[in-house]
Each structure stands twice: as structure tokens, then as C-alpha cells.
Image (cartoon, rainbow, N blue to C red; front, side, top):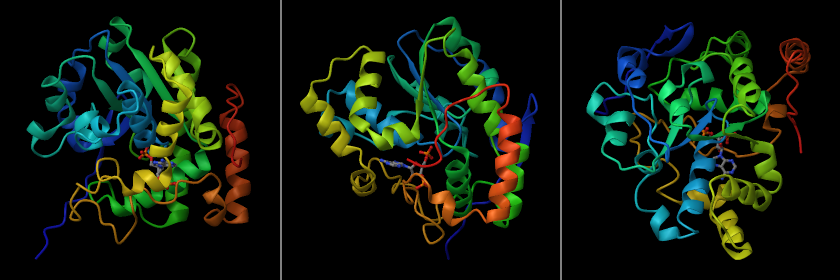
Length: 294
Ligand code: A3P
């Protein structure tokens, strides 16, 4: 008999809903120490985190595929706030065993990023994805990730997303929080749609930001190694190491579709109209050039 993981529930830190296990061990996040050489990859869940992690790791390893396959994504670039019922397996436990420079993943909104990252003047790469594709991806993920709260039906899920009630809170506050700070702090703000449209251009931007020179040849190799199809086949980048009792692959794959515009297969015309109105209101004070199609 398979022992399925138990779905978590959400609690709050400063009004932001997070998995209860994260909230229980929050002190460890607050007291975490960053070093100036550390690089933080920050995203709202399902914005393309794993994709950018793979690109960054390959850039830092000058396109060496063997090096990038040394361990699964979450071991190479641990997930700062993630804890399991056994805290020795948490992201911070991995991080504490690593020497800087470390590449660190987080989904925390900017106000919850531990101050140590700003004090150390760490570089931050932020990736944002248009909210319609983002919520569709999150919906499928919450169906397959049995540690996440039960997603329920799509229409209610969309409503929760719009109200900021899903894990890691409001998408609007998240993307705007980093957007507003990007000039004051060392934040490279990227869009999923831009990477999809022209990966080589974005790889060069990232390489410049992290201070690495990549030749055209290496850049093109990195783009090849990080296509959706290539990553789906790469056991060190596709989360196949996570057991089926946690990731129920009958519900969805982690690398599910990897497209821009899949929202059109999920939003009804009414949902699209309501969402559009809500989006205009929520983004009125902070216009960010999101593209819903490319
Ligand atoms: P879909 O569910 O739309 O397929 P995260 O890593 O933040 O959890 O985001 C996961 C989303 O990014 C999934 O979206 C996944 O398929 C997509 N993704 C991962 N690697 C990708 C790649 N190489 N190219 C395009 N999309 C990718």
C-alpha cells in the first residue's frame, strides 16, 4: 500500500499565507545568513523558477552539462523557506552545508525576504509570468503536489488566486513588490514570455548580470539544454526524484506544457472578462508590461 503524503494547510506570516510547515519553522528563515556572493532566484510559484534555475546553473558552469547534472535542482539550488516534517531535509539545512557562492530559490514576496540578503547586497533574479498562465500552472501543480492544500474546482481556485488566498499570497503584490524595488536593489527582472520568445537574448542578459562571459556557442548550447523538451527528459531537472506519493504524476507532470497562452484552454469567456477587469484595477498604479500571448 502506498502511503500518500498528507495535504498541508496554510497559516500566515505578516498576513501572507504559507504552508503551515514553513510557518512552524519560520525562525530559521528569519535568522538565515546570506553572503554577498550568494545569488537569489525569486518568483511567484509556477512562474518558471526551475527553468531559470537550470539556465543560471549552466551559465555559472559555462555550459558544462555534466556539472549541471551533478544533483537534482533542489539540491544544487535549495529552496530557502521550504521545510518538510523532518526539518533536517529543509532548504536551509542544505544551504548551511554549502559554501558560498550559493544559488538560492525562494517564492517569498519581497517584504518577507530575510534582511540578510539586502544587507549583504546579494544579486536577485526575479522571474514573472503572466497571471493567466501562472494560475493555470499553479492549479495543475496543486492537483499533483499532494503536500499543497487541496485546490478544489477551477472556478473557485481562480477566485482564490485573484483574492491572494493561495500559498505565497497575492500574485499582484508579488510581481509589483519586486518591480518597485528593482532599481534600488540589484534585481534583474525577467519575464517568462521573453525567455520563451528569445532564450539566447535572455541568457546573455542573465550572464551579464551575474558577471559571466558566455560565447555565442555556449549560449546556444545552454538554450538547447533548457528547452522544455530537453528539461523534461533530464532527470536532474524534471523532479523525477520526488516520489509519486508526493507528486502524483497521474494528475499532472511537473513540466506540464511550458507554453504561453495555455490559459485560453481554461478560462471561460466570462472568467476572462471578470479577470480582465480585476487585473486592470489591480495593476492601475503599477503598470508592468505583461504579455498574455506571444
Ligand atoms: P506549465 O504548468 O504551464 O507547464 P516553476 O518551476 O516555477 O514551478 O514553474 C513551472 C512551470 O514552468 C511549468 O509550467 C513548467 O512546465 C514551466 N517550465 C519549466 N521548464 C520550462 C522550460 N524549459 N520551458 C518552458 N517552460 C518551462
